[in-house]
Length: 206
Ligand code: PRP
Ligand code: URA
Image (cartoon, rainbow, N blue to C red):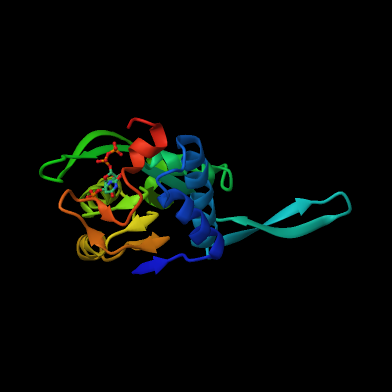
């Protein structure tokens, strides 16, 4: 299922990300802010469990998160989303999947994978700001499922209809969260209007 997160703060900050005059520093900060706001919405119905807590005045029943959260950024650009989410969920574990898209074939090439052992019982958020053809996200989801993950959500910022269709087809059990669904892809596989090359804009490599 596709879920568009269109809180006004997310939408406003997305406009800053789209703007070509936004500096690397601002882009990095804003992507983290957007990611935190998205995570706040996505975690709205996480399960809680009862605990007992000693307040300064008495013992009380209280509730804490009942499930572990594992973040899996897709390198490179997914790294730009991690800090904004760990600021809210400091106990989250972080796995990494290194993938890049071959510029001619647009097929994903995997070069790194390191995932926590607890992934099979955790809520897993696969992070990649761009969902273009969907090849990279589909492969990243295949990797986490291969390690036993069964509760997986894809968190991207901007998506193209092509990428959404690809994930719905390859992983119908995975919810897709986007801040915006854009028009489509250009002949080089870039999202239009999009925000350009997310990795380059986060790391200042172009
Ligand atoms: C970008 C982006 C996604 C992928 C999306 O990564 O961060 O991972 O492209 O495209 P797709 O949906 O068509 O697969 P890129 O290949 O540029 O690698 P980088 O993050 O290392 O720059
Ligand atoms: N990867 C990006 O970084 N941007 C796009 O528009 C498509 C793929």
